[in-house]
Image 1: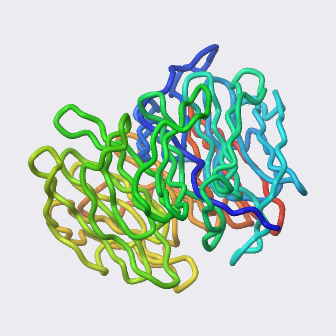
Image 2: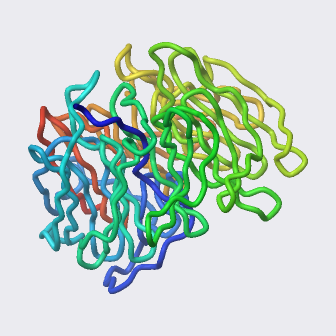
Length: 419
């Protein structure tokens, strides 16, 4: 009988160790999807430059199995999570050469749902010397970063009777206060906190179903909270106790998905989804105990699963869906929700901001360098870097851009050396 599933793996919170045994001159770690602060901003990277017409140089590539979990980078290691036959595999590769440093396999139980790809969806996370991966059947594993040796495992989907959802587990982990926070989406328990050293349950909260959005950190009045978008709600809670700070409806019943990570900017929270859910900007008051909707709408920046970049009072991201039409790249004003400019037929894309430019990798395998200019769309460079679909979170570390593609039950991880 297929084991129940749940949702969690993928990214981390706001603390991560600095680069150890690292010989690079520029850059820093990329220890979770969307980077160190889970906002797509690479603060330690050198300014981005245009590449030759032939595109960035390929440093190396590595064959993978199925799945949509993006790569992460810590020190001199790239960590990648994928499925080979009946195993979910975690690999550590040398960041400069792609050589395998260690490899660990776990039994894969997910049988596939709406999407025939049965591999893991959630990007790994690293906290200190620990690697966390969450499989498509809601099995959570903790490994030693140096050796790949397993430290503990939890069958959370089975423990909490979490349903499969449309695509298996796909939300991200959040590590805060020595806890791993998980939107498990069980029958009676929605969010759980586990001790990072033992895997034991610390607290349980809400009865919310799981989404495909990954949680992030919300800082209010000097206090950090965990901010989740679940299946039907946006929720902030205390990471130590699980006590609820606030909750507000966000989502729709039916064949819909919440996939983008919420964006926390000072005392504001930006929520976005497609499927006629739309975008919503919240203004938090009284230390987050109350809030009001500053603006909302479905023709502003409705993202199917890509998280927009915050920069100088604006958001840059894709508006639209991968499966209906072609998404547009937009810049919007955060204060008013006004669309500043639009680049049509851009395609759904994950983006990484460095200083005043950002890299956007769309699903058609095009890597585009764009100025983060709120006045007009300014394209600096473009290159076709993959013939196969590129849907996973990319990573940027020490001048190397890492991405994986998917074609059937196989894929490839590629490292590009940026100029």
